[in-house]
Image 1: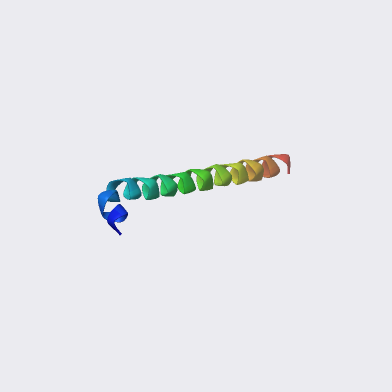
Image 2 (image 1 turned 120 degrees about the vertical axis):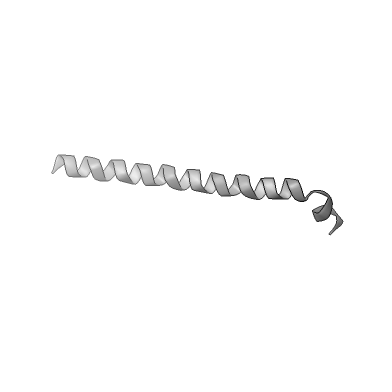
Length: 44
């Protein structure tokens, strides 16, 4: 418990970075899906 109290700033930073990474990866996947849909619509 002492570790959490002494390093709470680092823990918050790590959680924030993980959240931003998750959002970034989600947006990349969404972008790929949108490009694929646009390509499919263009071909039809």
